Length: 68
Image (tube, rainbow, N blue to C red; front, side, top):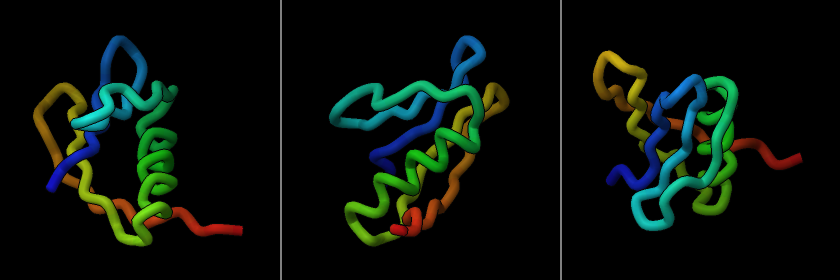
């Protein structure tokens, strides 16, 4: 169910895919979650993502980004 994770590491936010590994590194958690939304556009479905920010794992549902 959770193929994408956003993990804080060494001052960056990493977007990780279970199968592909690291997909990107971002300055902020918001930027990383926007990237998750961009991936959700491919499926046209919201994506469940796990977020690790130092004090445990949290779950978020990210809606697909809007196409312009």
